[in-house]
Amino acid sequence: MLAEVKDLDFYIDSIQILRSVSLKVEEGEIVCLLGRNGAGKSSIIKSIIGLYSPKSGKIIFKDKDITNLSPRKRVLLGLAYSPEDMRIFSELTVEENINLSTWITNKTERVKDFNMEKIFNVFPEIKKLLKRKGLYLSGGEKKMVSITRALALNPALLLLDESFEGLAPIVVSRFMDALKRIKDLGITILLAESNVRIASQVADRSYIVERGEIVFKGTPGEILENEKLLKLVGR
Image 1 (cartoon, one colour):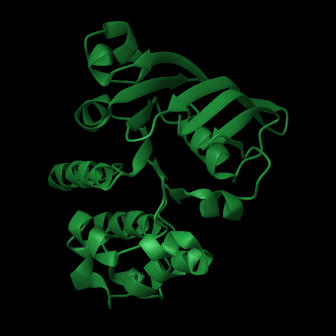
Image 2 (tube, rainbow, N blue to C red):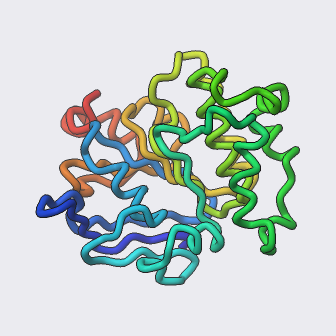
Image 3 (cartoon, rainbow, N blue to C red):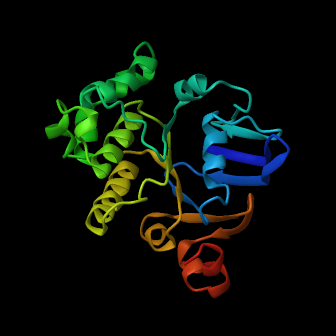
């Protein structure tokens, strides 16, 4: 087991956002958190990376309880995160945006195994953009850079939050191919996604999140064949 969330409860002020969330991610999988906007998918991702502090429950990564570790320490253990809003610095070049993440790992064993050429194989487009400032990137290009910056950490588990949101269909197809290439690099992926049809083409397993709870676990194909489940994810 690479990662496991056990009975996670999370509140913002007095409002409960996550309710006894439990899930598992095996090494080498692409696992998708499916649900409508506001269902709690992003809160699960942010809890795993350490941006949110749960009220109760545990987060296990590589057999280690990381529930109370800082985001930086989680990254050093092998987690990486690409947020929904990309967080690209507009005045920095693409190369500088990517290099920001490696400052965290430049004195660790992880960086010795890092090879930028591997990333160029995932997103060949990045190579031509290295000197371009973030201000002049399209939405799809920003998502590529955000994911590339996370990959530069040489993670064991990559957390992606709505990476397909707002992309044109032809770009969606490109990103689906990229996820498969990332998996081929031996990197496990946990993806938050709203579109079950995208999930069906990239994910090995899926969890449906509804009002902060896990209400289904199985394959995307099972969801596509079940009208009640499709209504839960809004498709």
